[in-house]
Length: 300
Image (cartoon, rainbow, N blue to C red; front, side, top):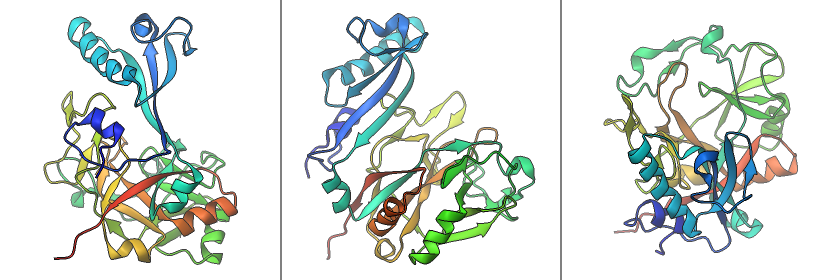
């Protein structure tokens, strides 16, 4: 397999998928006092304390930003940037050719269900990372706090969808989704019936320039394997499974994130082409899609 640009920059040992048309950038919000070390005068969007800019991952400045991050941390015990996020844009052809897609739920809100009486059994959660606790009561949310989107999630990882979404799922016979009523009219909690395994080739870390597995007393990579890192940085890589062809909605077995206050590690969400087509045809809101790479097992 060819070496993928983003993975080469993260980890020179990785061999992954090469997208010919996908546009990949990192959105950086650089503290203004250091922006001149990377950017040209007046480049980027001046937002007061920092400058926002998109840097293509195949731009030499991407690697320079990593070096500056390390240098400023070591020399000044300071941060080069406030925020970094990888953004990918695919051609229509690429998206349509994908067998499995990463479903990104971009809208996040609070308060959580836990704050309004939703009960969880913490005794079954991982004692190290806090993942996989069991919800044992219907989801209860504060009325008036759910965003006007067809899908959103709380900071605690509880996913809610609109009545419109629920009706579309039933009408179009999508598989693998479970919809349960909540205390707020015309909204449902969405869960998946099936888990699939992430491949070790999935890259996680604190940010694109720091793949650390722990920080300031927090553990992001659980030794039991329940949680594999703080943030997803690459496209997901999953092991081939019969479940992929049988379900329109799935979640990863492993989690991403950290137990911190009301935050909990969450799975990655996946969907079929049929799911994506329905979302787009019905013009449902709150969804973004990236390609998921399936690692097929060779027959013996």
